[in-house]
Image (tube, rainbow over the protein chains, first blue to last red):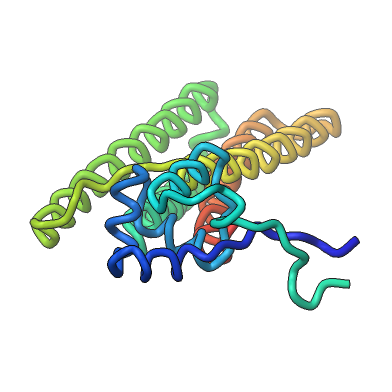
Amino acid sequence: MGKRRVRNNIRSLRFHAGEMTQKELADKTGVTRQTIVAIENAKYAPSLELAFLIALVFERPLEEVFSYEVEEGAA
Amino acid sequence: MTFQEKGIATALGVLILMYGIYGIALYDMFREGQFATADAGSLLGKSILTLMAAVVITTLVVRIGMTVIEAIANRDAHPVISDERDRLIELRGLRISHFVFAGGFVVAMIALALGQSAFVVINLIILSLGAGEALGSIGQLYLYRRGL
């Protein structure tokens, strides 16, 4: 089984939510903008609570925002 | 570089500087034979306490200065917060620090068992403390760049 990583489509959701900025999303979820950047770039897997908060901001179910996929290039 | 990263890098710089000054001062005192007297233990203890106080006070002053400069430079910015990612990276750094210090402590005890002087053993412990802090900070900076 290949190594999996938490991926997301937050960037796309932000765009469709009135071009919300990373800073605005960070403020709504109580984290720093750098954390949102790290999440979008799949460099950080958010906690369950933060993942739910982000999904709540976009009014989407969790599985529409995040996915657990095999890493690109992994066997 | 984020504010947290700047803070970590600054603390690392202060640590290296203070340990460097401590090392030079210790070497000078050793060459002058000050550790060959009956008061060697007391002198070493005072030197180490001075080092610790210097590190804490200098880091505090520099951090306060940085915070003030950051506040003046970014007047309209929201206050900097420490979120779950910052706390996780801090914990990982702390784990690295603890492992390095523990390893250094074992080395110091081996030195003691092999008959090394208290001067050597105590300085090995102090060195491992500093190395632990430094490597913990480097680890945190690496995690901020590479991601978790």
